[in-house]
Length: 352
Image (cartoon, rainbow, N blue to C red; front, top):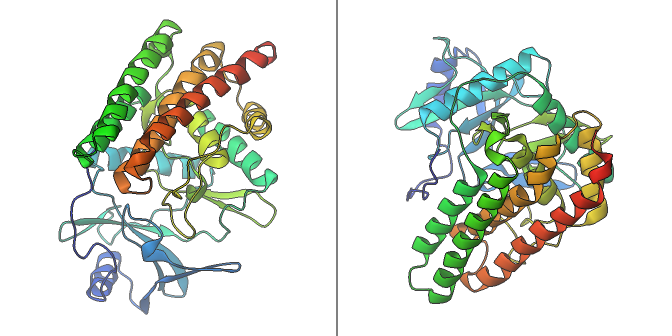
């Protein structure tokens, strides 16, 4: 799956009411159907269509039940969509906590409306992430369960290092006049190639390629009042790759990255250094379900560094981070790589 710049869409948000008739016809919904733009979550009241800039989203009420409508993002080709849907169906059949996918009257899982691809899901009740220990521990254990269940053997492949390189190149193109940022992106590529070589020497290419989520972050999980995971969402970035990438992304997004309120946008401040205690707790929770192999542990620090740089470049591309912060973001990613290296070297004796 290539890293593509978001196309200009002057009316990107706000599903219009003409869509209701298409949905009612496409899904055979005979009775009332209405759009609900407000998401109520405890004390939070969020406009759903501004929560994410990746794709249109909306809550629906249809025939007395709640549904969740999502537009497939622009960067997902049909192979990626088919892979993600096939995996979610397999997970649902295995009683894993993913929303059910509704089929159209013609048994399709994707409804095409003009140039848009729409998917209708069952709505899952729950709350957003509140950074409680029971939540991030449950998130890690749920990820391990996800990695333990069978998934598709064929599908799009992706590599953490190449993904980060492509994000760096797109960040450079996004700010061609920012000479300081361009210089930092050159260094980013050099660092990534160095990490890639070191990971290769440790057996990165020999790690099994299996279905991974690709965007395992607080925004893509729903929690119960007790802190349990009630659903894993958003498989748009699912692909075949080493699972250690998913693990490291979970640790960073649940521990280091700050988000702007009510959106998946990163807050402008630089992410935090790795909090060792939380990282250790998440890894322990993960390994209570699925043990990491020796090779996965040896490659973990380089995967973490690549994920950190991908996050940094994504924030620059979207305008979440100022171009002038590129140097500090690179320093943060280098620190993450060193911290994870140290973390796993201290726990090497606990490998099972």
